[in-house]
Length: 87
Image (tube, rainbow, N blue to C red; front, side):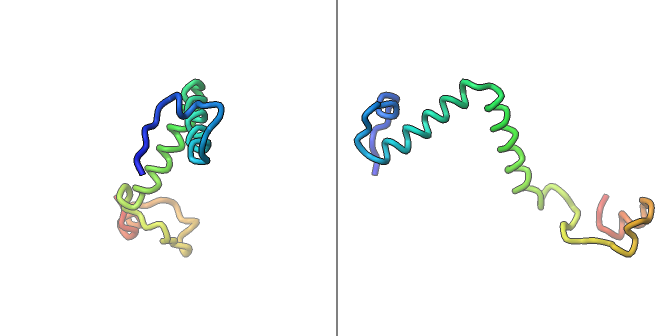
């Protein structure tokens, strides 16, 4: 269903439908976020974390489930990095 959405429709004090109430609340929340710079920064940080976490399998060569418990206390070495498949 396509219906015209305007600022007046979203900010109407006496909404006619539940859909208008829901979208009005979302729009008021968006206006509040835009007016608050720290909230916008927080929103950007949260969105960046979500995007990077969803792209993590393609951004790193390490396997998330791999654990080398036998050598967990050994110091870092190039041989272990090559065996792990990294760098």
